[in-house]
Length: 149
Image 1 (cartoon, helix red, strand yellow):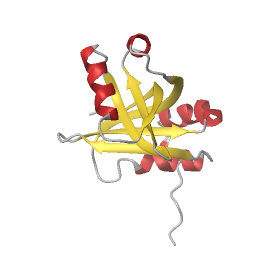
Image 2 (spheres, helix red, strand yellow; image 1 turned 45 degrees about the vertical axis):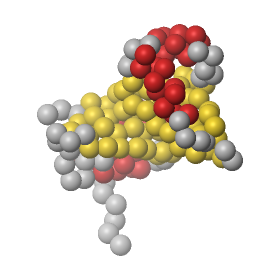
Image 3 (cartoon, helix red, strand yellow; image 1 turned 90 degrees about the horizontal axis):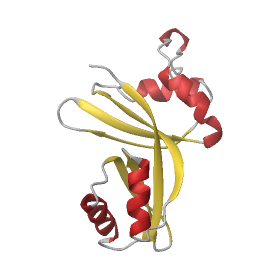
Image 4 (cartoon, one colour; image 1 turned 180 degrees about the horizontal axis):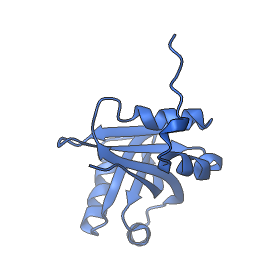
């Protein structure tokens, strides 16, 4: 099985950090048949949460959000990595970025249950182009493992 490194756009919305806010937006997007590659939600401050939407079709998401008066911020960029799950599956990507001097600002991963994983990586926008080259590189000869402590 292969591993795919995808450059993806995402949009986010800030909502009240209370029960049901994410559900309402996800329900609406589902009704409008907006397909998402990924979705994340996390608190960002006093009483607010950030919802990140990674759509298959950005125009469809923007249209649906506009029709519902949902304020979207973006597009922003991230990476979606999908591949075969194995011990250390994420390590190679962290190592490649670290060796290139690129910091991972945030990440979120999950094993989907049939031996595959999905992993979203956010880097600083100024590092995005270089990170794309590094993540898509198959030149493993340049990888240097971290020294043992």
